[in-house]
Length: 472
Image 1 (cartoon, rainbow, N blue to C red):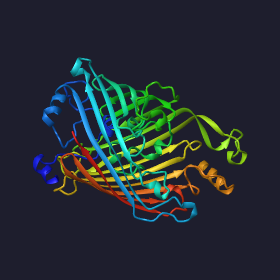
Image 2: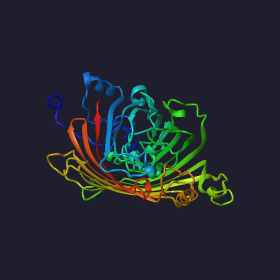
Image 3: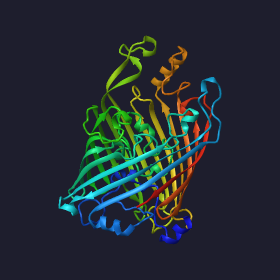
Image 4: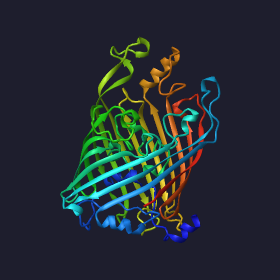
């Protein structure tokens, strides 16, 4: 079948892990204003990634002529431990094993200006179906999933991720959106993150999703967002995302088509500013620099103190409640050099960032990440990509103190811990192979230093692969 595919399809075009359905909202954030307006509609053009079936029966061309963009893709992730887990009665449920997880996704974007004359209006809809599980829990880690495409899909055939309208005004300098939206697809996001498979990077750095009220793909809440671009390379955005109980749980959001908002318990207000320069002598080295914070207006328990300020583990009282808590982030990626002048995505790109959360309420008070992507360093393989990523996650001091007291007093531990959680690190090395048009296969190596942030669990090594198929 593979030989048949090579014989039927045209030569390979630029298909990379950056261009997947889940990255669509983020790509709109990370695209500066063009120097010249060549698009006929005031709605920014929709992406058209390379696909296995580029134009089946002329369907894609017909839809695009009518201002409709429909995409279908599949991402699959497999990982297995090559090291043995901790042994002993305390760890009797741990085992050395492997698992597979993945999703199929659809995207429907409609330009209503061209279709119906509604100037600047577009609608965006994404659905997924997810399957499988993640392997890291087999050896006791609950901080960083070895497979990002796990959970949140409701175990249904079709789960609604996003459905919202967006109005573009003032020659794309102002965009206003509202509907069912994922906060972490607009804020603290990058389409480069899912060049990796580990959940400490892919989707978004895991530290930024430490709050259960920050909606991230494949979850969404009712929201309103405004993004302004005072210059070509600078944007400022903010919004209101209504916090919902159980946004990742099947009880309330199995299908994602629950619109009544009965479980809204507060709101989150994120603010972010970004600079998107093109550096170098020829102004061709793209970069993205962003800084932001989010204020959460939802009652959240203190992770150490009760209402009197004493450890709730010792007093037996309920933990103190904080009405307001926050998260903040500083993120950057910068292309450092180009390998092929005619191919803008080729070259060496560096990523770095810091996430810092409210230490009173967070499990992870901060996370730091560093990564490198080298695409097209072999001239004969211009779309292959070598990726290396390292993340360091620190557990909030309050959580450490609470777990130490629980351990000393022989109480059941929290956070699925079997020891005091302090800090954890992950390393991922992968190589994305552009197999053919629309198909990427990525062998992956992952290494967990101090799984689950615990010193009593041995380091774990995993081997696996990730595949992405853009079907049409």
